[in-house]
Image 1 (cartoon, rainbow, N blue to C red):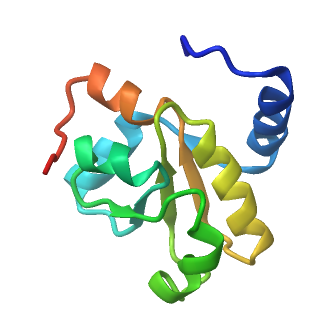
Image 2 (tube, rainbow, N blue to C red):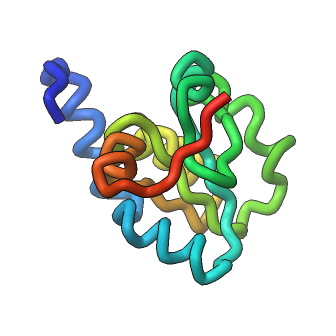
Length: 125
C-alpha cells in the first residue's frame, strides 16, 4: 500500500482485521470460476466504481452500506465478500456488517489494486 494513511486509521483497520475473515484476490477469482454463490460487494466511492470494478459486483459504498445493506442483502447468513481499493475500507465495512448480525462476511485483502495486478478481469462503464 503506497498510500500515506494516518496512524489512527491504520489502528482502526488493524483492529477490524482481527475480527473480520480475509481472503485473497486469487480466492475470489477461483470462487467465481467454480460458480460458488456469494454476494460480491464493492465498498468504494461511486467515482471509483464507475472507473472499474470486479465482474459480478454490486456497489454499496462504505458511506452507505450500513444504511442500505439489509434492503439489498436481507439474508444475514449469505456469504458476502467485500472489496475496496486495497483491503482497508472493506475490513472496516465487514466489521460493521458483523455488528449488524451478518455472520458470513469476508474482506478481500489487496482490493481491486491486487486484483488488477494479478491480471484478473475488470468491468468498466
